[in-house]
Image (cartoon, rainbow, N blue to C red; front, side, top):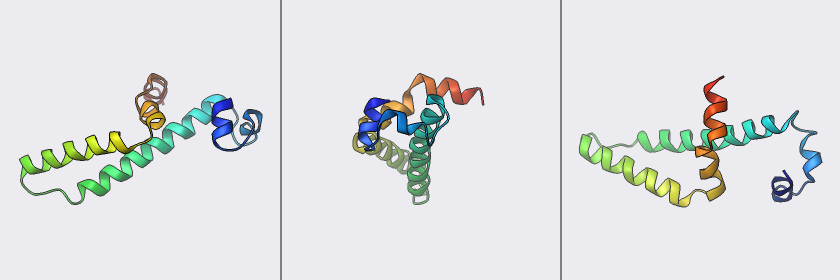
Length: 90
């Protein structure tokens, strides 16, 4: 939490004035990362070629570029086991 606080210019304890628990902070982080991922994917899919092979190639290029350009800590958050387990039980 200290690292997160430093990144947003706050003390770790101050984060709890906006969130009830550490899990709520994680939920917000995962939610934001997944929403950004979904928004980008939907925008890309709106312009897919009609040809299935070309569409698959476009999707593969999109995801490759997405993971290369996305901040590494957020890519890790998208694949973090906590997020998968936690959200699977909701």
